[in-house]
Amino acid sequence: MAKIKTKFICQNCGYENYKWMGKCPSCNEWNSFVEEIDEKKSKIKKDLKDIKIENIKDVKIDEEDRFKTDIGEMDRVLGGGIVKGSLILVGGDPGIGKSTLLIQIANNLSNKGLKVLYVSGEESVKQIKIRAERIKLESKELYILSETNLDIIKGIIENVSPDILIIDSIQTVYNPDISSAPGSVGQVREGTHILMNIAKRKNIATFLVGHVTKEGSIAGPRVLEHMVDTVLYFEGEAYHSYRILRAIKNRFGSTNEIGMFEMRDIGLVEVQNPSKILISERPRDTSGTIVVPSLEGTRPMLVELQSLVSPTMFGMPRRVAMGIDYNRVILMIAVLEKKVGYNMESYDVYANIVGGLKTKEPAIDLGIISSIASSYRDIPIDSKLTIVGEVGLTGEVRRVNFIEKRIKEAENLGFNTAIVPKANIKDLNKTKGINIIGVNNVLEALDIVL
Ligand code: TYD
Ligand code: MG
Image 1 (spheres, helix red, strand yellow):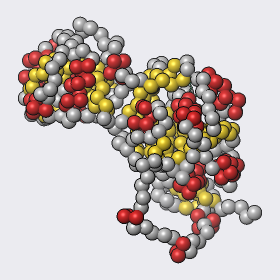
Image 2 (tube, rainbow, N blue to C red; image 1 turned 30 degrees about the vertical axis):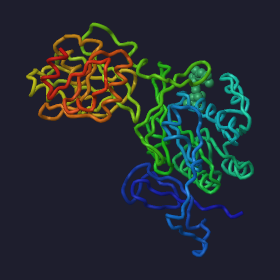
Image 3 (cartoon, rainbow, N blue to C red; image 1 turned 180 degrees about the vertical axis):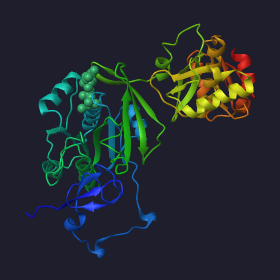
Image 4 (cartoon, protein in one colour; image 1 turned 90 degrees about the vertical axis):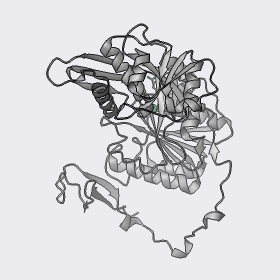
């Protein structure tokens, strides 16, 4: 068999060469060459007559085009289940629970009568079985294969024709035609390409597991994200048992949704009421903390905002934001300085969302302002009070979306007062158990809060 030709391409400027080079002669970038199969040499020309184009009105969509995993958190993040023939990348740090999540999904799907093929390049068949026993899985049609050679994997997929394919992980599989090592950018991209072609051709929903490398991207410079349909990240803190599943990209759903799980000794368990957990460890009678009803996708979630304001030691004041947008924190500090008259330039400000959550929504602005003000003046905020509202540059409080959902969640968790934008008041006529106060600007809000 003639050897498939490969070439090396500079990832910076696209310069091509048949040998690897340390430095690109065209753009002078170092270490930018990646091996790829030379399409010109290996492509089979297709006859134009064989290519069919379709009128959009004749394209049929079935109701049944999604598989439900029956793990509610997962289905929601995917936008209502797995789309047939789609390619889903599940990224995360090693040890976070990707394999556990996928074997649980594989188990559920196989018990619904779907044929699932789980290919592991990291564990032996026995190790997979041990994990499945640990989390007490009993599967009907779940086939496991421990293999890393893409030629063999390809052959098995053709033979088995599964409905669902899981590749754990994309960094361990390799195409023997490419000389670079498994896990290199060239191999990872080639592997994804091959699997994508099979998935689309045979309509197999495919999960690719990807370890996040040190730089924080999946296998180097985010090479896979644009190739797949959906990118999910599984995150969590190493010393916390809670895990968050987040959609970074989704061709078939929203990217705002998050799913929450807890890693227990029997595998991953869905967290049905995240708000309760997120605010459970909240300290009492201390300044700098407030709970805000934020919205993650379609789900309201109560989160605790904390701030610490302390005198600046050396010249420039420090500003640190964790889990919230740094620029918004800077803006809120400027509003406090100018509109409320606080002397912020001689204080450091640290602001944080508790529980490893991240949000960028402006609806928490008023919460950020309140927690900073509470720490600055060292006055604790009533623990049964919550606040929501976007803050503009003149200190005005602007309306937020889905106010009713947010307030309902606060009410359910026992809050008795909610400060909301005045403009939102008319959307909120039905609440009974919680006292609603509308405000026009930051000064009015702080008068009530502190
Ligand atoms: P794993 O799914 O192997 O992580 P990944 O595939 O992302 O590398 O999960 C590894 C960790 O999860 C490991 O430290 C053990 C722990 N774990 C549990 O706590 N409970 C369980 O039921 C299982 C299967 C794993
Ligand atoms: Mg794993």
